[in-house]
Figure 1 (cartoon, one colour):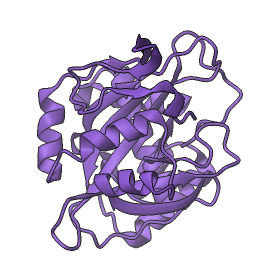
Figure 2 (spheres, one colour):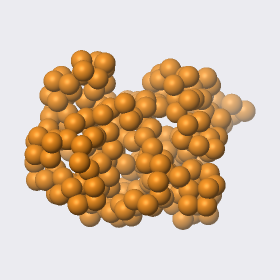
Figure 3 (tube, helix red, strand yellow):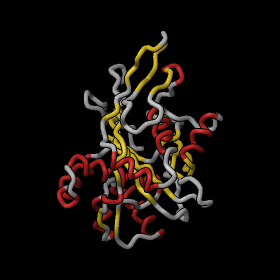
Figure 4 (cartoon, helix red, strand yellow):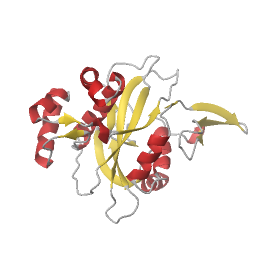
Length: 264
């Protein structure tokens, strides 16, 4: 997740995007999602298990302006989806939200070119690929605004489906130390055992994802519930502070004792 820059969030937050990538479980059980463990040296969410993604760059906005109309999106939303596609290719090697002659060899070459160019547009031109943003479904938007924190991310979450489990992924060796597939409940269980660490938004999203027996179920719920910006608030209950979120945004757990909340 490319979030370590000198730019601070300001009143609007730093725009970011992330994709929750599904694949069929090898044993036909609950679907799996791809997670990454952030390098402990990263300023944001260091050492935490998160979904692949990162900040929206100026080049994403430029490409979003160019292609938004053909995808039926506002330029700002197109830029966020493009950032999610770019960051996924950069961080995992997966070419999602793209169409063309895409295979393991071309995806690896495109990833290498992206590392050099730092933008998606020249990669699309070089490989003759096109954006297919219909592959991506808006799922949530989190903005944990806090006046005491200068670097706050306003992150849009998307869903995408690989279908098959026979897909190779590899870390970028810069921001991440480990990529792994897990069921949503499996990730929650691993956190309870102390094997991984989860920040508040990731935990709440995993709890929501654990409701679904398939990608189709997740997408159906995402399409049925309009995306609203979730801005966690601290409230007092029984003399203790709780961090709470919207009660009607699709999340089965909407609060957590503040003292137990892991922060990025």
